[in-house]
Amino acid sequence: MPPGEGGRVRLHDRLRGEALGSDADQHDVVEARVARLGDQAVHLVQQAAGGERQVEPAEPAVVDRAPAPQPGVLRGQRAGDAAAHEVVPRLQRRVEHVAARWNGVEVVPPVSERFGVPVFLDNEVNAAALGEHQAHPGVRDLLFVKISTGIGAGLIAGGRIQRGALGAAGEIGHVPVPDGGGHPCRCGNLDCVEAVAGGTALLARSPAADLPGLAALARSGDAATVALLRDAGRRIGEVVATAVNLLNPAVVVLGGDLIGADEPLIAGLREAVYQRSTVLATRTLRIEPSRLGESAGLTGCAAMVLDRILAPETLDTAP
Image (cartoon, rainbow, N blue to C red; front, side):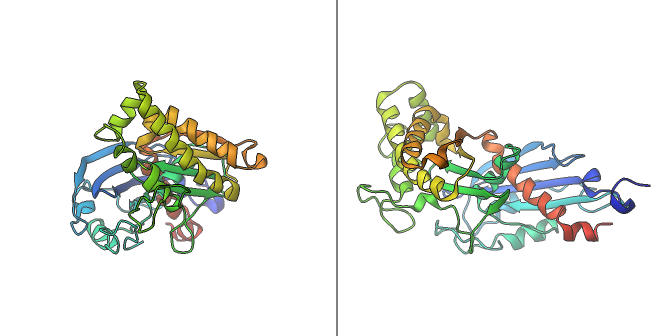
């Protein structure tokens, strides 16, 4: 009798396919990457697909930068051999985003037409949170905070990603902070923590030309940069502390370009979180850098695909 309940070959025993992830950031830079799914659907191979590229939101860059699907992995080939190829851009059918240039842009139809498969759309920080969840076995409650040009968060609660009623959960970058100095934010409000302590705000107060340069200055021991990043960490930590009190995660994972300067920024963030959060919420709390780095989002894209493939309704209709 074949393995699996009732004599059915278990889907995950013969899973084949690829997950394509595409990321468009607030500066309209698009990058496409591929994850290949192996025997037990746990081995991921990351492949860059043409690198990053500046695009207009109306341009079908997600499609153009995607590698051509490999023959033989798009459909199930025989009974008991379940093959899948799902496309998962990390941005629903159309984008609802605080970055006005991308808001309302329909991404799903052209990508689905190109590959002839279902397409799932999500916030890039949610994808990264799902990826980090894969890298933290046994953790059911996790908060992923991305600190880059912007600031955002993805929440895993009870082992599941939490998107909110309209997919707007996790926008902690748009929580205002006291004494912010009246800085306008791209969302239209003033003194959001992103506008005060995000990467763009920090570069305006630094001689560095970009975030890698800012991180390099911090690593070199430049006193002004270290102080700038530590203070930014404290401001971000004030907001993260509120999230910790509200959500009680087991671990806060920090990712994004500024985590290359992790020592002063993470030190300031930890200081604020432990000072402002309750004793119970921080009793066993861990605050740590990303374990997956740039591959967190790609891993999360693959996790979203597998959730769909292994969903009960999919298993019930599998050959």
